[in-house]
Length: 302
Image (tube, rainbow, N blue to C red; front, side, top):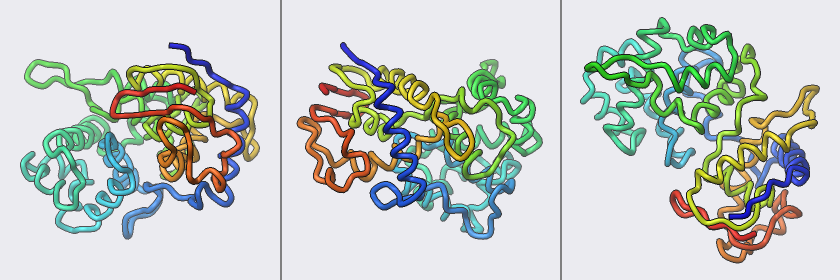
């Protein structure tokens, strides 16, 4: 294994993709799947917080546009709207939750997704008065503390300690939740977001590797490369400014996601040839060579 992090290249890519996404878009897009609010829901309301929180808690191995579309349909239907109410989640039999989460394809793994969804919702109902903001406030709105508490807080079930926040506690979803609370819900009290790692999924990984910020030769588990990618973006944004504040790693999450979802996914996995090269905003940083991601395995030769 020989992997390098090119922080100077990362700085240039960070500035370029952030500016592109904030103006004309990347591959013509400036929106994210979670940006559309369900009908009748006010941005920043408690309903909006639960829509974001519960949906992102099952955002693993999923196509994001279809996940968020399914969640909005589930929210808009009066018969399944209760799934976003933590009190009603607590009072509803598990089998009904499992069934209703399948109505619009909200769950792909019915029992697992229903368990995650219900556990997160019921935790906020039982421990935090039905309002996730009470949990955030108990962490003094401090982002690293929030991530630690997501990982560590438990409750007893049949004598065993069970996570209060399954999957929401994860290394991708936890930071992603905080970014959405900032960007979508509009929570301004969150502190120390600069210490939150970029939420690395397959798209952020592919875009980072395809632009050569992390490059070299490697074959192995994808999550081993994730550590390099998190470190790369912490390093790359240092010293950069946007809109009268310091840029942080979370700021390049959406641009990189778009770069891969609508661009880098089209490149040849072995040669690096990309049919969209000539109209890609980041084409000057596109590297040749192998960037092959198959399931949980990555092969890199760039």
